[in-house]
Each structure stands twice: as C-alpha cells, then as structure tokens.
Length: 68
Image 1 (cartoon, helix red, strand yellow):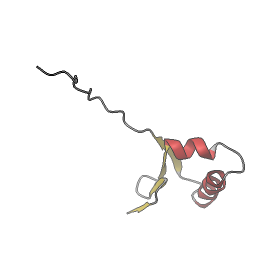
Image 2: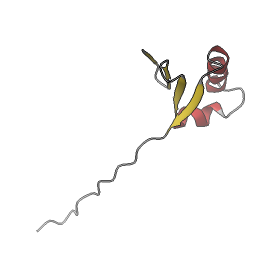
Image 3: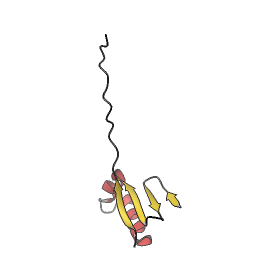
C-alpha cells in the first residue's frame, strides 16, 4: 500500500519516503513551507528511509529542421 502526494510518496512496504528532487532542494531552505512539511514527514515516519528521486532526462534529439 502506498500513499501518493504530489511532492513525495510514502512506500509502506519498503519503509521509505520518496521525495522529488525539486522538493528536496526547496526543503533545504530553512523556514520555507517545504522545509516545514519535510520536518513533519521526518517526525511522523522517523524510522523510514528518505530517497530522493531524480527526474530522468530525455535522450531523444530534435530532428534537423532541414529534412531533404
């Protein structure tokens, strides 16, 4: 069973909290809303592991504008 939220996902089976990279960056700013939310997560799930999920970059290249 997993609880999905926009910025993070709580994985109860793996005992892990998966947070998006952008959310983790914003949570690093002391006093921000994300910082407060992240600290609440850590308090509520103190024995869970925090995993930062990085966004996959696209490997497709744009086709040339001049096709023959």
